[in-house]
Amino acid sequence: MRIKEGFLLREVAGSYIVVATGALTKEFNGIIKLNETGSFLWKKLAENTDTQALAFALTAEYDVSEEDARKDVESFVSLLADAGILEK
Image (cartoon, rainbow, N blue to C red; front, top):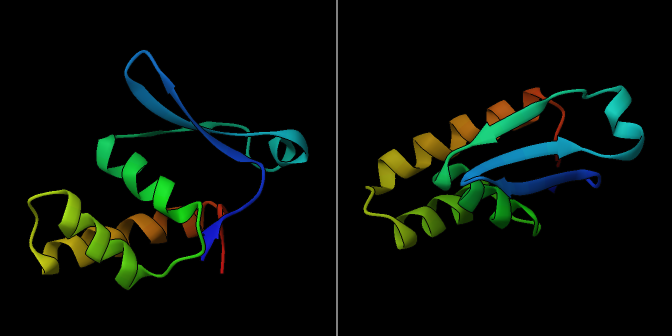
């Protein structure tokens, strides 16, 4: 899975936001605010990856257990999928 073409992550005044560009603005006309962990996962999703690789990357980058990383990744991916931001 990966982020659909046309969604951008930007850092604005220390906050991370996701916006749609081009034709996607007709379907998605808002912004998503991400914390540091969310922006880390977003950047990993710019590549074609899976939830297991995301959880591994999270445990390698942050002091988090494998179980908590897996749960956090599943929750994050679910939110993005529900918003129509992911390609599988």
